[in-house]
Length: 492
Ligand code: ADP
Ligand code: GLC
Image (cartoon, rainbow, N blue to C red):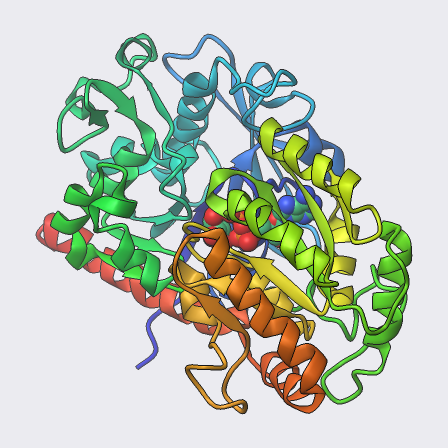
């Protein structure tokens, strides 16, 4: 018998197109819609960032004053763009109505009041979850995402009755760790200051609140779910994760093919598909022109998009790039991040102006054109919880070159590990420039010398299906498990 439909409160700090700094925004912009398609009653709750307020027609629903906070916090209601899903914005102008990045100020440092901002957000989510916000709706399950929502399962843990809680970890490298004094200043419940709460080596860890207190845990690929249980990837939380391994599962992200589909992508100068790939050549030529590279159909064009941080293996790219460029590859790179990576990449681009062009900054439209116009997509991450760009690349016929870690290992099949009819890309193991170089050279050689096998690789990639429906069904099963844990706690 089909399980009854659930009321799900989806709590997130980002949801594209209202707010996005990376993959969390993509996931939160798509998974709720996939759950809705499975006939679940899902609602999104996120901070009322200035960008989100500007994008939505808002409507005040309830004025909710949080006990320990000097500012009134309102819940605004609207409809999430391109869906019929209700979105609630936690509105506290002092905390969220700011220009720019949700986590860092114009000086590039974290906003100094992040502990308070995401405590305010979490308290509002908890109030809605417990039906105390005057919204006339109470969820069965609260689905929290990343450290910004980590306090929610902690705040709910000792309440009864309460909804089930699920915490999805998108990246263990970002934890929301704050001085103990902040915890006490914010008046968070003293019961949470313990080893099985948010206390973490004498500091307050918001992510630990989620990992320790949620009824069920997930992360965004099966391989990363295993990796984070080891000291190498566990950031000192691997012990906790091993202890809760029976509550932890890996559910691979999907791709939102409403947004990422070369046959209907309005950011592209031409469209193409697996059955008619001819338009890709025009997109490549336009991209070369846009980036200022020589327009050449034969030059192998590599694309790279991402946050320029340690995680993404930028140092490996810097090490391998001069040789690759000298061997005739072109690189189109879009990203922003750590200053010294930006500077080193800029210096290389200045050295090889007719081979390597980079765009420092953020551009949704250019990201689509690089996905589509490049022949290969480089993603040599040191770790990668899931990774979305390699999944988009597959659909765009842009062959991924990735390191075997996390979700990259789960989504790309190397030509040497499978026949040409099953392989989708190139995969290397060692996090070294030499390993990256050797693998990229394998790709260049195949591209140049065996066009038919290359086309087979492209076609197999384009045929992969990572639509959200399957992942959404896995989340439904996870919600069921979480609900069973809550009802067994309350003896029901
Ligand atoms: P992560 O979440 O670690 O940044 P993902 O691969 O999951 O990595 O998702 C990254 C998302 O952010 C993709 O949609 C990617 O296209 C986008 N993105 C990253 N950097 C930029 C940028 N500079 N401009 C536009 N989009 C970007
Ligand atoms: C994180 C991870 C990335 C993942 C994304 C969405 O930002 O770094 O690998 O795809 O979250 O889950």
